[in-house]
Image (cartoon, rainbow over all chains, first blue to last red; front, side, top):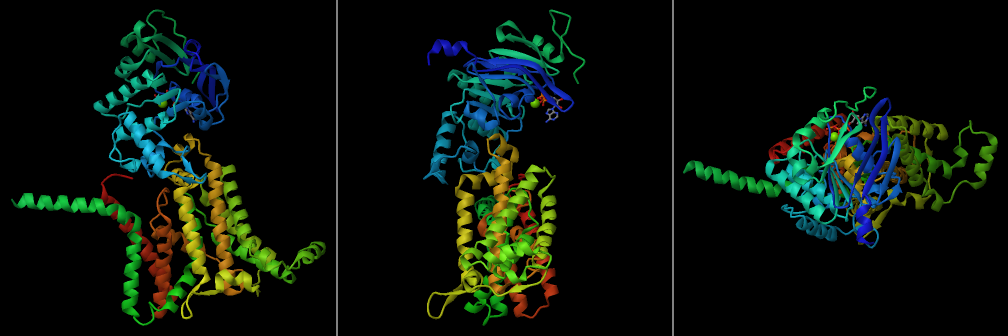
Length: 262
Length: 358
Ligand SMILES: Nc1ncnc2c1ncn2[C@@H]1O[C@H](COP(=O)(O)OP(=O)(O)OP(=O)(O)O)[C@@H](O)[C@H]1O
Ligand SMILES: [Mg+2]
């Protein structure tokens, strides 16, 4: 793999994605791309379709229309496993952790290391989980704790650790800081910067302008299930992005809104 | 001064509690078993701990323990299987019928009867596999039905098959008992294994120990076993991790069916027959054992040892009440009281424990 070609091709790209839930249109003709090592912020009002779009990208939902490309190659995800196998990982808004299982079991859920082809090698998994958490500078008392015993921030960290345990190319994070105390927010954001420095692409959904302007390279807004606006971070500011969320573009008065959607 | 000493006491108390909690969490029901054994010994010092009585208890709990083990696996996934008693009777009657083709009921067309009697009665090494196979098939029907038909809760599917499997069982046997089975088939439910010239243990106890051991290995150390727990803890987490939840559920219900079939084999062996009322209402005893053993209807919790202890609690209680000549109606009432108390203690413990919701 040569560096130049891999940096000019999007790590992940979605073209013309539409998603219908029965009569409800959640997404209509949405485009998105993220370059290797880029942090893309996605903003939008409640119900704008952010989570739905991310679930399409991570293989949980299949799109009603549109195409997905990983590293320039078209892909069809039959489920989250297929997406994970292509290096697309997601941290869900509700975290999707099994509270009754240990930390290491959550991190390696569905990808446990076996011994002799049948039995799970619990020791190896615990050791690798600990190493991985250390690498991410995440501190827990012991990886053998059950996840339900952890604080909100620690759970978030475990969810992120799971998404990054197998060299992911793209990590999608759906409001990872929404439920966290300030100190923990900073940790998560620094983690995102770390991922970026390792060449991992991150798609970050957040309602917090502080988050977006701290870590993102580029920001795009969805409005009522459609692309609304996007810009490199250097060419926009908080007020403009907040305007996008509300459905206002200050340069042009015409808003590409679509009242046929609802 | 007084304040500080009392507060250090609380701190120490708390640290003891923190250390004891996981232990009680896992093995609390074993304490109940020990308590019952002590009570039993106090009440009936000569009989209760005699080898004969213990092996009696084991023999009596064997088939309920197997049913409970299957139901437990289902309950880990936050599901329920009400049909185990019916699977038991269907597997038992199918086997009995294959040993006695002359008992095939009159409604079966003559040409089918002719065809069947040319291959039946089946030899013992075929018969012995009939109950487990029928059990697996029934369980797969349950699992397939509740995942493919998207019924709102496993309760519905298995309530349906509770009726269907028992109906089929009566249909194929004409609703009458069929007695007399080959000795080899009866082995697991009937035979005793001599350990020393004086001491022999029931074969059913051996079956129990092996089955429970294998199940523990399966649930704790295989991928699919851990995925079963994950599904109970958070089905969404299982799904997004790439676990095929539906396929895992089919395996779970098939496994439950397999154990119900094995329970049918044990009961047939013990009674030397297949009889139409076998397993009637037995699903409730099985569920009771699982819940007494510390599993939760919300899924994701409990272990194999707890299930065994739960079945023991019910078995010891029945045994004690029989030894004391307490009428069977009282036994029913007492089992009900124990279920409520055990779960109530569990609720108290959780409240006192960490103060954190689980
Ligand atoms: N499974 C579903 N079935 C039906 N409608 C759905 C489903 N999932 C999402 N929707 C609808 O799609 C639209 C977009 O929802 P989505 O969750 O993607 O919004 P969001 O931008 O993530 O909002 P929030 O900021 O509140 O998380 C909403 O109108 C929602 O009701
Ligand atoms: Mg959302």
